[in-house]
Length: 415
Picture 1 (cartoon, helix red, strand yellow):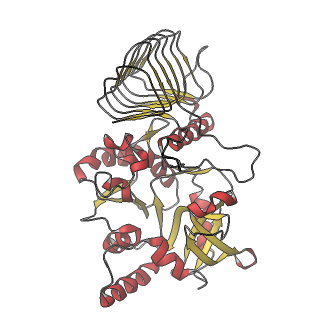
Picture 2 (cartoon, one colour):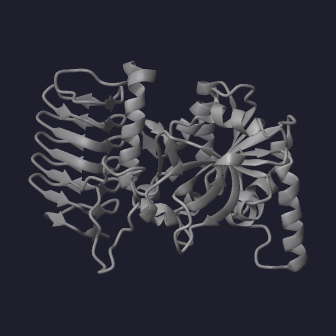
Picture 3 (cartoon, helix red, strand yellow):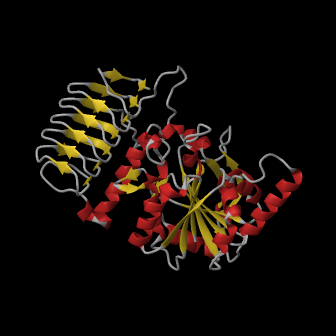
């Protein structure tokens, strides 16, 4: 079994959740945002479909079922696995969602199940992680995927202190600590033995007796992992490959680059070829790209998009139904669906790359504003159905949907 927890992005219209991914999440649910031409969570499902004895993929979130049904049907057919979507009656947290849908999880008598956050990007070594988990020989054990990051950024994640000499047992776990604990962090991917459901049930029974807060909503990290640490029931699987959290449009572009690069080995026919294609570029079959346009590296062109003569695009995601007029230049950006970019316009953001000379370097998810209230340098985002006239420059800015830009902008959020 695999649970992919869609969590806060499905409350994107309330309580201020998922705001760092706006304005992209205003028109499309964040887990369905395309990375390398496929929905963010489709990469998870593809990896899950390769597991031995795979039973079912369960998506848990609060979005209306009608919005998820088309994707669920397509993914089930495409990957040959059962994919279901279960809608929460209210935001429950990861542990709350597991508890609420425990009967669905137990169906088929699985010995263990994965829990995965939707906003992670990696090479998903799921079979290796499962093999490591099964070696513990118990059904009440949790295995966390962990990776190493720079010390300065470790406090942005759940931090793991593990004993390498004792099968990587987790002795201490702190979710987003205020001070340095460890540079081994939680990747948001777990394997839980089926017996962990009994522990989660006892937690909810205890909360109900105490009547403390919202007993239905419980987080896996703070309510389960912190208590499991040091109990000889929590272990870390150390991942040394690529991993990134996809929290912002900037990290979406970076993560799309990773998925595009993997296509070279897995399915090179998906990538575009030609004299004006540089590096990894994916063009939807229904898109029309002029032969004189220069694309790449790290470019995805969505369905029914038109790219005209002399256009230059690199490190950019262009969504469906856009028109890029002749000689426009788009660098380090995300162009929302149905957007019109005029001729000789320039759309440019600031690269969000890692320092190759820094050990354990990962792309970060900077806040939108710095301490002075000014925009942090980041990629440029054009919201859905934006119109950019010819000769206009939009630099390091965020443009909300349905805007007709009248002149050039730099370092602004256009509401």
